Length: 193
Image (cartoon, rainbow, N blue to C red; front, side, top):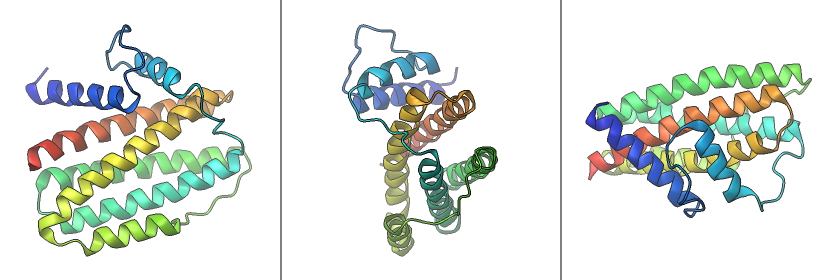
């Protein structure tokens, strides 16, 4: 394992643990999917149900995907940092693939969804687009970290609550993707300082 991978895994573990208030310090703190899901399960056990309407969930996620594509296309165009450009291209590629899965799942559920960028997310894209070159990279990485932390929480709740095996598998894959993006964003943030 290279030094960079080790650092990224440590940072990801710390991020996950701090996000959930060290709820399970006596358990194995590895970053394996099952251990993360068990740790997150305890952290979200007292929250209200997230999945109440599959159509609403899919529509919300479609808007989130449009948002991710918008900010990552901005980063590809505006950043001069090769690491940020590479991260943005990876996120864009992963979200396009995941979006195809989202649309396939929606069709199988007889749910029609439209790619509509929510107003608050549209403002975030516009604000990021107005950032000058000096501040752009820091703002982009901060936004990626915040949004991916939020998405990890949402998708874990979906994973935890759904009885649908296809949605459970898809949410597990999505969580893995999000954690990888977050780990890389954390690594890049530390290199920007």
